Image (cartoon, rainbow, N blue to C red; front, side, top):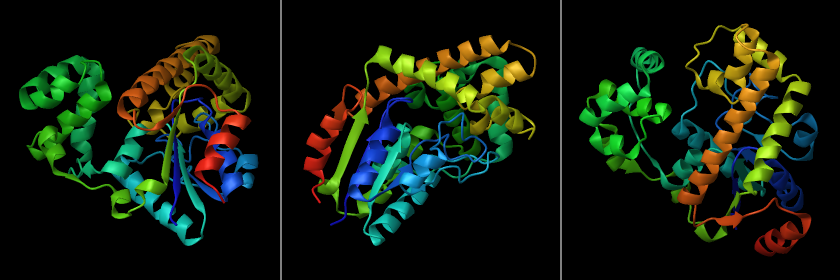
Length: 311
């Protein structure tokens, strides 16, 4: 029987440890569902699996894409589905783990097939956002796509830019494209009863402390050198890899704008804020998933997951 295990949740929430335990117990293949861990430039600063962890179980879709590229949710979903099918062909359990909720939604529910956006339009929109602020683009969006504008806060720069560039490039509002959503790759497989979905949601204060400690560990393990090497590539600052948590703060230090202590404090603050947004998003969007309100324990795993996936 085809089975799969999905593990989502905020950054530093314990997802990787949960996935490794499941892979060990159930002969699993761990498939990345984190939008920053796809880039080969950043291993330490995005908390990609260590060599030891990769020796414990097969890992797929980690660091497979060059930082000069942009990984869309649709692009990832196609590759993830291929890895899932490959795991099934090898009689292994595909375990998808990550903090990018949109990846899971596209894989399961599908996405509107918006045409590719020309680079010049994308860069122009991002430049305007950086110079004038997302609130200005949000005002434009209120005229061109009021449906989307109503959903987005003026400070939601990433989604506002996306909506503006789609309308400018295609002449059709994003809200209209979204009405033409195609089925997700997983919908072609009738395995709803055999896909177990978990969200790890630790207590907020515990999560914040984990975020702080993990960034300190990243610096100890060479995160600064990693960002320095990335900076030397002279990539556009608008690329996703250049906006990964911790990267802008460490770039500010490398360019002399901040002390390392200030850069570290800023990165930790941004990580905590991001984790808070993830907590809210997952609770709202994935309310039908199994929720673990505290860091998982060995006894919890043995009592619940073993019951769900009997050998």
